[in-house]
Amino acid sequence: MTATIPDIQSRFGGHAAVDAELAALYERTRHSVVQVYRGNGNGAGTIWRPDGLIITNNHVAGRSNTLQIVLSDGRQFDGHVSARNAERDLALVEVDATDLPAAEIGDSSRVRPGQLVVSIGHPYGQVDMLTAGIICAAGQTATEKGLQTGDLLQMDARIGPGNSGGPLIDIEGRVLGINVMVAGRMGMAIPSVTVERFVAGLVPGGAHAYLGVNGVIAQLPGSPTAAGFVLTDVVAGSPADRAGLMQGDVIRTIAGHDIVDQESIPAAMLRVRAGQEVEIGLTRGGDPRTFFVVPTEQLQPR
Image (cartoon, rainbow, N blue to C red; front, side):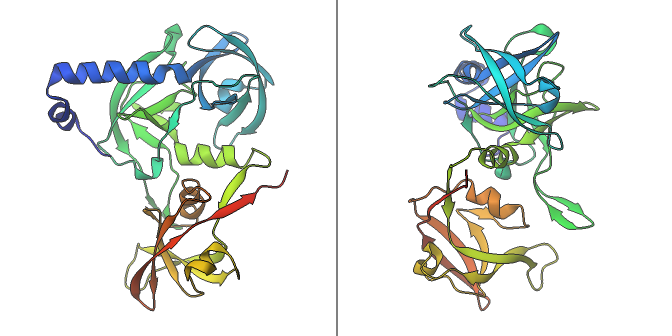
């Protein structure tokens, strides 16, 4: 959803209602934000799963394997850094706890410039500080290699030391990204889709939705930008095969998510659940077609 300040004022009936809505948003989401302590330094973290998985930045974790985690209700835990991705500046911290107030994860692939966002973190020693702004840049970027997705979200919401690892949230309370740094006057956040891929690749034995197709990304004829996923193989007996997909089909959308490059496929599949019907938009022989596929579970090797 894209919203501007006037949009929100119209939606909620004026400035007083906007103030009340933002205050309610803050109360609804701040409990999923934790304090992360490492020696004399501190930052923020976001509860990603209720069973003790917390996301922060790799630079917040530093070289430490054990961090002190403080929840909004004052509970303290020893957090173990179980995985890192230095290139994307992400770290996965696990604590021995269940039923934590996990954040609701949004879909960063749908973020558009002009969208109102808020950030929660602990800048300059201030716990659970909220700032607001708009997305300034998001989505696809033209490069020499073609369209690329997964770039950092840029916003004018003010962040500083102590915001790192905290969430960037839309007006519905969904996490769109993890705050990572300031560049000039712009705040930067790692898109939620990137974080979800990081987490999904690290949880052993986790079940992932399976369609049963293989293919390659190709530019569509007559368009310098539009791309699709050309099916080179449909596994016999797979969900895609049973639904009627065929070799040579060009998938354009999965569950409403546009397929624009190689990153789009896993990003879209993260939003798909095994056993739940998903709409596949494709072209066959140049004609648009729609199919409905029910993915099965595929276990990730332990």
